[in-house]
Image (cartoon, rainbow, N blue to C red; front, side):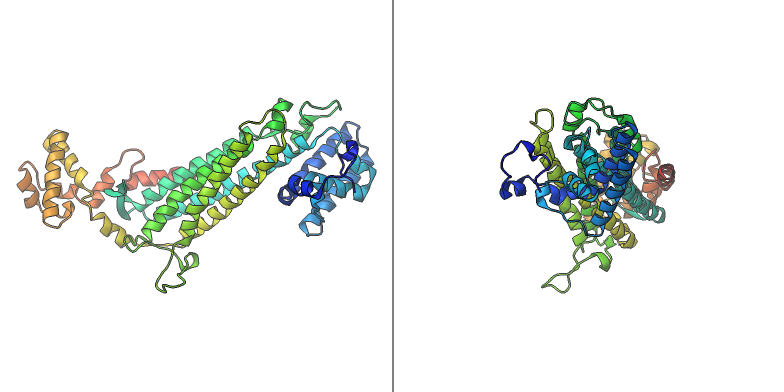
Length: 461
């Protein structure tokens, strides 16, 4: 069968061009959106008197049958059809005849693909938000159980101050909250229908774009048709949002890798989500978080790829924009499986509280508390208190102790203004709970953070 656009051509296209030009093998992912958009368009054409009631009935019935054929694997995808739009339209014409040829009235593949792709991206904005919410729920469940589990908080990957494991998990909950908000913001910003813009300049047919927008669940229509068929900001946004999400996932994955090592032993990854070595029988490898860390790179690449495709394109549609979809499909699928498997890893991992506490007793994590004590209790200027504390650290180091294990007599020998109540200040538990400012690591502040996240998630339901 000749191509539907081939009227002005005297020769058929070469098979090589068919292969190079076609997008059907990947844009068939959009079949649901294409059929949904076509049904909405047909209803509008009927309302405007362009399609009869009988034609509308045949078109809707035919499109729904095609959807079933695709889902049951009975649809014959042929690369000569170029893309999902032409494949469905050709099949519809085969099924219902003349009425199928009228469906494309007042639209172009330019606004049709803009619609399909936008609907897909908006759907994935919502689905990814939901998966991230599941992850935040898991982080909150862990946080509720570990408000008093102490581990070393680090800067420069060096022991800094004692914090709770709950507090650490809530830091990631904060990151993922921002990710959810980004996807939601993108959804709202891009919820405008492009259909009816036709090739680039609109259509002379008496269409009702607002009707179609309402039928498809958009807030409204786009404003300028020239921009509309050229716009892929919505695709770039989901790629950026996914890249940022994966960066957050990668940071958590990196910590899971470190924490599961023999040097740390803070966590044990479940056998369900670990692998072994082909040569070393003792090995238990954290392959899931390593893959999460690695897959982040491909999402970065997909974002840069589309930015590069779009950077020099004149208005309006250009065939370069056919390269917009594969990266988005890949990033979406990468993010989906990453969120699901990370959630399972977190839910099934064992947390070694004792090892975390032992690690917090290394590195003089309460040194700052001694300096604060000298300022608050002894009225010593902070710079002098800092120097005195440094001497206490040096003493502890010389005796193979942590500063929290120095006796009152040892501390008193450094500066006689120190009183016996200093010992309470040097306890890990006191240090953690003394940090009670808004957003801090104390149990009471962590409980407030958990309450905040629970309320926020409930509002999202």
